Length: 150
Image (cartoon, rainbow, N blue to C red; front, top):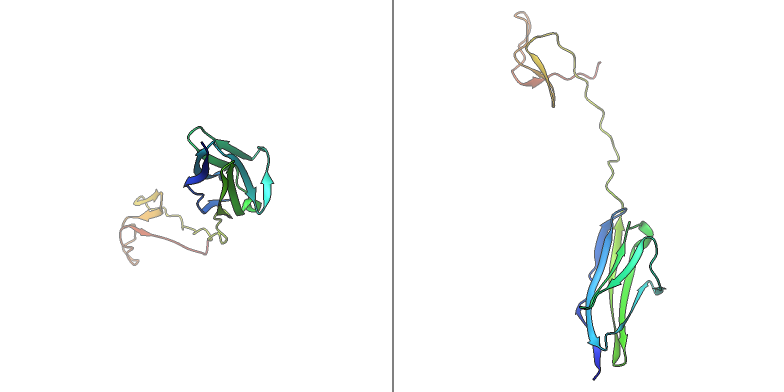
């Protein structure tokens, strides 16, 4: 008895940050179990490489693992399943985007040192706790003192 291949789960479009691993997966059935072929933009994958490996199990799960994903891995991937009763294919898009990088590094704030015993250095900066002289303007408690003149 022959049964044409059919997808139980098709490939899904996937997005990944460059440098991270990605897994393209689907599930297929057929009697006899079909031969599996992977392609990217019509170029066949015939064997595993250092970064790209293809796997299948006895339950019809198929996957391609790319690690790490590079910009040039982006594109359309197709998996085909073929036996004596027929052939089917599923195609999905892999997008590889650059890892987020901060393009503008903010200028660090400079905090004017204080000789007051009421000032405490915290994780957020210098915390001035009512440290003022009687003749000057008071600084409200909890205020951070900042200066670009230092």
